[in-house]
Amino acid sequence: MEHPLKIYNTLSRQKEQFIPANGVNTGMYVCGPTVYGDPHLGHARSAITFDILFRYLKYLGYNVRYVRNITDVGHLVHDADDGDDKISKQARLEQLEPMEVAQLYANRYHMFMNDLNLLPPSIEPLASGHIIEQIALTQEILDNGYAYVSEGSVYFDVEKYNASHPYGILSGRNIDDMLSATRELDGQDEKRRSIDFALWKKAKPEHIMRWPSPWSEGFPGWHCECTAMGRKYLGNRFDIHGGGMDLIFPHHECEIAQAVASQGSNPVRYWMHNNMITLNGQKMGKSLGNAITLAQFFNGEHPLLEQAYAPTTIRFFILQAHYRSTADFGNEALKASEKGLARLHDAWTSLNQLAPAAASSANISDIASGCAAAMNDDLNTPVLISHLFDAARIINSAKDGRTGLSADDLNELRRIFQSYFFDILGMNSSSEAPAREEAFGKALDLLLDLRRQAKESKDWATSDKIRNALAEAGFEIKDTKDGTEWKLT
Ligand code: ZN
Image (cartoon, rainbow, N blue to C red; front, side):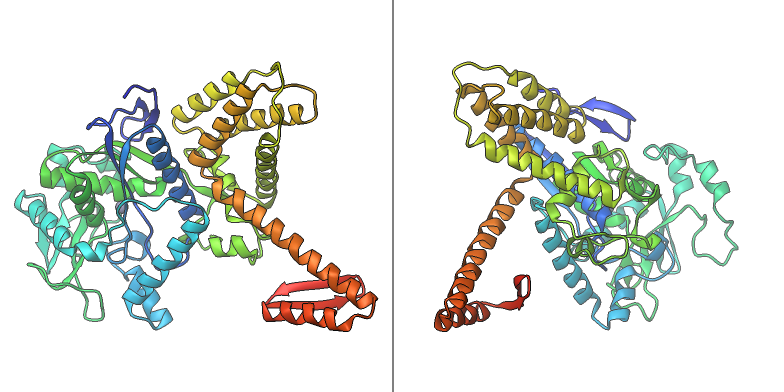
């Protein structure tokens, strides 16, 4: 398959032409959420970034196996080797079983991702369902001499590994700098060096999530799951591994070390990372205490939000920034996205109503090639969107009768919108939802108008009938001096 898609590889620090190892078959692994709370804007950004990649690869004709995991065990508070398991901690707070917490927030994650019109991944493995694979991985690393057992836990020996393989190739960090930047161990610690990381942790007596292993009853270190599940479902070497930039170190650096130390080779050909969402220039995140959840965006109930925002607005806002740039959250930016999105939907509606002109006065082929070039340039969605706005201007000009569009032009514009706006940017669910809502509103207005007329002509039977039927259907009708208000109860 010949095409010029280029993606930025974090490992080589440059844009590279994407050439899958296995022809039309390709695989991508993306680090999914740790399910102990509602997803926030950062989760949405990562999920949407790789949804675009998934959609675009499929659009180009690849068979894509997309694996996105769910972390339900092993991810400790502060990403450290000591401390509480994030899910166990939440379980105590909510007085639930840890698996209840994981299930609850996995369900809610799926619900919100569905609202954002994400395609479901091909495989969505759970860390807790792959304990055997993670124990096997840990054993391989021990057998190869790159790990040691200490007090029932198993740690990766970073210094030993670094003697033969560079540790830090992904993040660009240097082991000496890392050693001097971290605290000296006081001799009480189980680890030999502060930069060593856990492959297996012996569970403390109060720790609920535990499994038997050759070393202790315990649980796997956080980094193990992605190495174990990535190679199980995509093979020892696969094309793309993605995630948020905050995962480059230590998570992805450790994944590379674990794979090399176990199977002897690098696991991934292209590493891709999306940038963060900022709030007044500061990183937004649950651990920083300034994260707004998607639920809050959708209902508008957060002190920083001036209104509620539809999921499609959030999706469009995220796509208006390139995935490797920061996206700065703000009400003004979100409202501008809302308007811009409405403009594109209106253009699509107009496009489908335009009659072809005999002669054409617009150059549509430039727009088509611009859209393709933007996507091939490391998924440059903001540039793609600017071409769609150009298309909208051409459509509006034809609608106003200033220019003409031939039948071929109209077809090509429809193809551009269908491919790029709906299929690749995934803005299609919104095209139906507002139209449905509009039709719904009009039907309700008509009923209320009929009821008003009935009341004016003192036809109380009809007016009560409408009111009662609406109440039965779940509407609360309130007459005010300005007219009639309604809400769904
Ligand atoms: Zn991961």
